Length: 232
Image 1 (cartoon, rainbow, N blue to C red):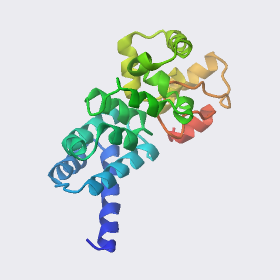
Image 2 (image 1 turned 90 degrees about the vertical axis):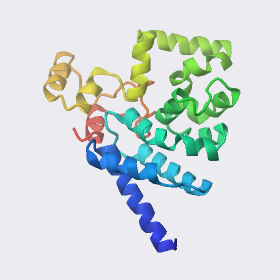
Image 3 (image 1 turned 180 degrees about the vertical axis):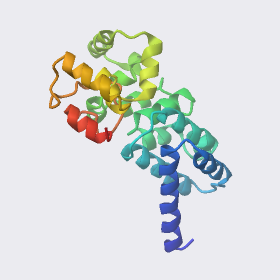
């Protein structure tokens, strides 16, 4: 494949990926079938595809069923991923995306009960993005006592049972009521809530450990900015 054809193929694949994550119709099904029929015989070609998937997920507006979409595409590629890459390599490829890591853990493509997983997500960058809290159940045995106590205190303040915690992780969004109203375009409920609580539209949104969007993690976002981001 010459460079022009390669660039065309890559651009077309990106368009199809965007369509897949945007739509829930037959276009999505056709894309999944095309990926399933793709014979990936070389490690670097699979790496390019995985990098593209990661880029789209990290930078594109995400649908509400994002975790399901991740599972649909990675389940098709699971065999090839495990064939070409070690578990550590898979972690290195995807560690910038919490939701992908969560899927990889739950589908047993990578192991979260190993030291290498804890080491990868405990750097300063990922600590700032609350990886240790998000993956607390997976890495708690590796945490120093004091840090473990701090995270447990933070989790207890959420007042969530284990099933609710798991569900919110898969949603991967700020779990505040106002944020959910904004994402779902629930205008009347949003207006009623801010009026009752006398909340300014310029007020800053409290951070959430469940936030997985690269544009919103560790950002001091106002309600107006959050609404603009979701096109509400």
